[in-house]
Length: 417
Image (cartoon, rainbow, N blue to C red):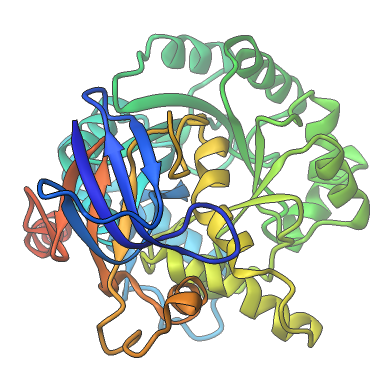
């Protein structure tokens, strides 16, 4: 049994609770939560505000290597950026993917991420699993079926070949599995149906890039006479296990269809701004992702959902801080197939993160304002402690096992050799 005493903790309500004692059993589950309690002598003290562990619901770890190399393109677009991404993907092998993923996942850990959904179409599944284990965070490996377009190394050849490959994968204590239809550009309707059936038979989450660009919608309408969302609906993909990633160019009918099925929408505002994609639709159950990893900070992604909508609508306060916190925590865990996590509550996974309130960004914060302040002014640099399954993987803002900056430098530097 381990004990953690939180100066403040967000337990799911509108405001944090003071002096919260969290008990963790030998299986890494929360066995007790008590607010307004004094710290026990053997308790680990968590400063500032403690939140449930954050879930990065959509990542392409290998794209971390593009940071700073693509932003200066004048007159560029998603499509020109994509050519640079293809060139990077062509240069990768299993060793390089593992090193880059380990370093990127460790960077996520420093930012308070305890679970990542890695949307993978490079097909180095075991390397990705090892990387997450080394970084100390949980993983949902979202294996994407990719049959048309792109570059050859993304392709499985057929939906049967994809199913055979993915069916041979096995979950581990820290890894669960999910399926993905890369996009309606890359997977034809019959194959999308087969992927959806494969995921449904296993009860796996199913993710897809949806309506990221107007050109994607236009092409789908020309070829199939319906939007990408309607095409996925007709293929049986939409359900409460489905996540539409980006969803920046949905019609009102598309939104209604996703709400009807209680599907998730995963927003990645930093990438969507970086690639000039547009502003997503944070309706129903929405989650957050770092996508291209141009920046890794889920607090920034959370507030961007609200702030981008303010620019779009001219209205403030469309999403309350507690709603944004749910997107970063519980909804992310649910969308990635970990309904046993994402909350500080008895019986849940002991995954939580403490954010200091005494740094330059948050100094002077009143306890009753701590959740609002962290979400609208906090940053990854304010993360002090990260606990996964009752074990500290980050303490005092440092990773317990890895020199993250050195890992990133070495992994990215190796790509030029």
